[in-house]
Length: 346
Image (spheres, rainbow, N blue to C red):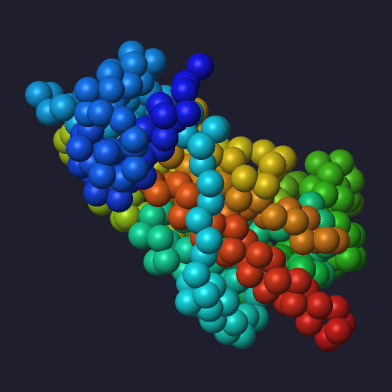
């Protein structure tokens, strides 16, 4: 059980270290308001070190926070800063442009958030499960490749390049388009997903002598529609903060930042408004000295989305939590306005 002074010392050390990156000593703590002698402060710092909340750096008398120290701070001492009016206006203006597709809004939010904070930003839009398939078109690229264009009622447009098996000709492609338009257009994506695995295989046997490769083509063309797409901004920011041991380490980090599946798995369930995970809580050895701040939001009638920042454990949590909260509110309003415009247009 920490005393109030020990909590104040930990709080000040974290605040100073996340700002300067330098170890904090007793002299600094006294100057910033700890009403005790240097000897008493050093004794408290030693107790905090023994508790695993602080680390001593080589021969210096200063201390830096440990990962456990950050965890204690986040759980017990963190107070979000107030976002100033200018920062709010920058966020509002950055999301005020005209958007023509929901994914444009979500992608832009990741780019803006990474620029505002200088950290790696992740953004996922409202849930896929609430969308309906409203449009489907195939555009030939050449003799063996096509682009499938999928449109949903929530303003999502996905395009997927597919290679056509040799046993499928242009008339077969026309049949596929008719089947999709007759059986799947207007259906919720969850229903489309289910029918691709139950009803559609049986229908294909009526239209084709052999269904070899055709069901795979269906899945290839429509597959992206069923997945939550994650947009990433500022990937290279992560390399600015994480010391890389060697080229293999660099390659592993680069592949991680480009792997949508890994990044999706990094995010937790959308149960709480905010969640902060530190070090091994992220479940990835590459990120054992990093932290992730996740903010979730709900768009009534359209599902839940997520924003997150990934950076070093010594991120300024109180500032970033406030920025994320403000950004989340502005993004939510932008999405509500966008959906309202779709409804009025329809």
